[in-house]
Length: 248
Image (cartoon, rainbow, N blue to C red; front, side, top):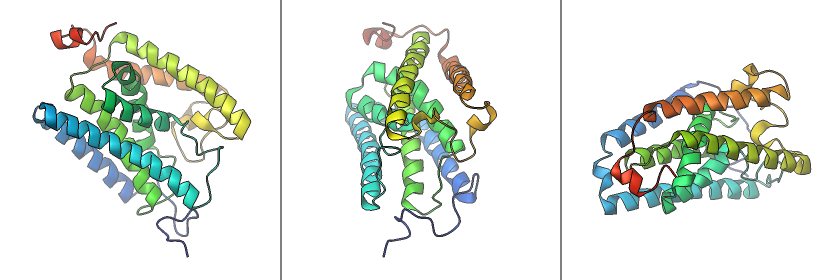
């Protein structure tokens, strides 16, 4: 008999937006963000920094592997909705490789797309499985990991985006949108929600009907990226940043 913590079908009440488990998960992430900021200098020693990056990258990759294995275990794997083509799946993989390689181009894209996408997903999850189901833990750990990875590279490693990074990210998202449309047509899926709106309540509900909400999402993405860039606007690159050729 399948364990209720790993079963594909929900036997009880599904996940509810801003339920106690949802709010507690958000508070835990906020606590971790505060800790990361307060201890950012202590994490900058070479050994500690390397260990932290590798552990966080491993956790992100493990979360994706476990997610795929869960679908195989429950015989629910399908190319229509299990491929890592949702925005947070893509930025999760980018986050892991960014941590391992310290690649600045990955950072540019992941900082904006990762934080904006994961934050929206955390606030209005596309999730049906309640606490303490495996998918509940996977969802919040994976999305929280994306946010923490981006903030780690910013606060600990000294990376930061430039204005050009916004346009790089917008270009990447539009390329990903085209790929998602093609894959959706092939699989019948809804990657990036470009074929129809998500089933759960989300920001997309306020952005118009199909397909016009896709254009609205472009505007929302640009606005969110601009807000994320405000703390970095007008700042001259440090010698450390110039040595990494961040502005190239």
